[in-house]
Image (cartoon, rainbow, N blue to C red; front, side, top):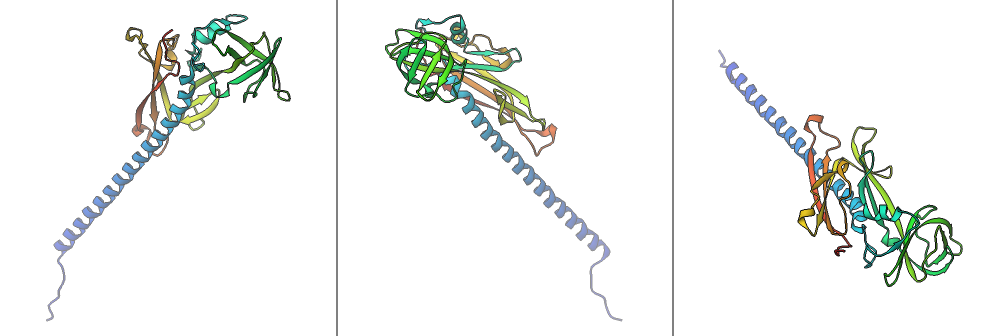
Length: 272
């Protein structure tokens, strides 16, 4: 009789069990690697979104109260209390909890070369300037200033008609009102919005902290729904806190949430 050579049933079952354990281990390692990759991708995307959100917020915040060396407490002529409201409450919340930032657009400042009553001739018409926009004209020696609003723009001869008399030999600053808020897009993802236009997705919460010369007047960390008059002439910096959340790829219960912080220095840092 020929002797058969092979493996026994017990050996076969042990081999199959070991193979199954090894296969499960490989799949588990693959799943863990995939999850780690997804998490790292979400973190990278969140960092990029936070970077862009900080840039959008830092630009107007940094310019609050800055008029290229002129003190913010100069005597300003204004037809009403508009300048007081604009200047004394540059960062405030709106009725719906949004964040309103009022600051001069220094990059669009232009020289006033001639004044005829309420019409001024400028070296360049500022971009995006339109009727009823607020402007501030400051004399070159910083001795006086006029707050006004635009009535008409004539690009052909570079003139701007205001609702009050202008200043000869001055610099005209467009004053910008920007409103930032956090909404939810059609996919249910929170996003940072400026003046109704979506900027960055994944921003779930926004907090600011005004850093002042006198620590006793420190505003503390405030959410966007808690602002009143926290910025003043002694504010030297702003600490921004963004709470970011992952946008996709993970179950709702496992979404990645991170808080990013950045501090910016105010361009107008002198104590008035």
